[in-house]
Figure 1 (cartoon, rainbow, N blue to C red):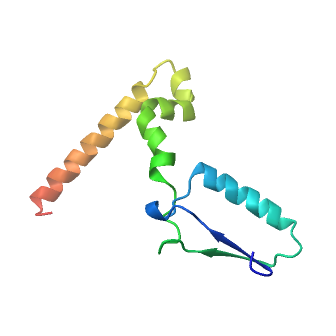
Figure 2 (cartoon, helix red, strand yellow):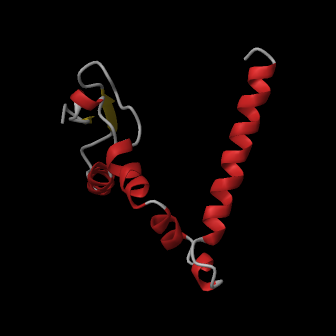
Figure 3 (tube, rainbow, N blue to C red):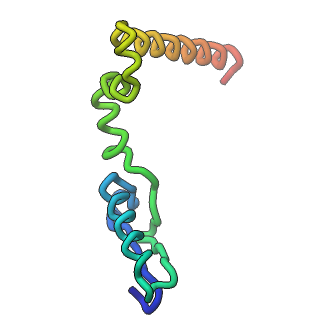
Length: 113
């Protein structure tokens, strides 16, 4: 606190201060507490280590989804399992995506890209 101003600094300058599930929870709790603080009239976010925030932490948030592969997607979209096809729709979507990428690369190569 600096007078009637609450000062917040993310503290992972080595990674450009990314947000994680933990930091989201800490910010949520902080703002809930500040909502009841009669002596706070402003909140200021300051940079740390030359960076404010790089956004969501790819390793902590996206990493588990990538590591778990299709199983994580199936958990998010359980209707794929109920269809009795297992992860077949996901594999088909991957093949379609890969074919589109290959066609795009061939087209770009033909046109000098």
